[in-house]
Image 1 (tube, rainbow, N blue to C red):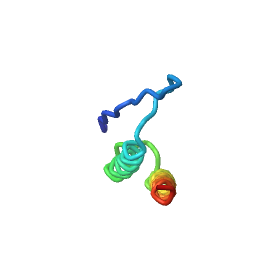
Image 2: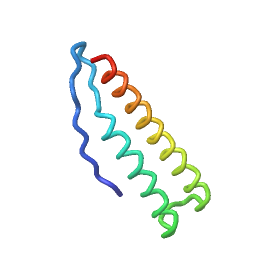
Image 3: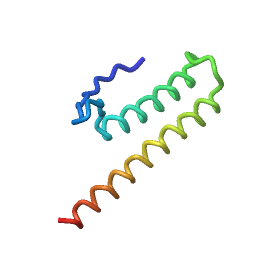
Image 4: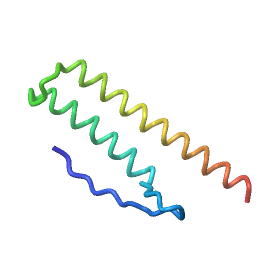
Length: 79
């Protein structure tokens, strides 16, 4: 089981935000944990399902990274 500490950042409107790099790290660690658990027999599901789910989480983390890079690049161009 993984243990992750994630900082919460309050926005002006009171909504709590999580830094994107922490979200992507969490997704990738969860994906890796699922695969390790499936390979060791600790997970009740089959290995291929764990790999498929792991792949989805990793792709989501990659998509978040790409979106953040695009957003940061757009900010840099505006200055």
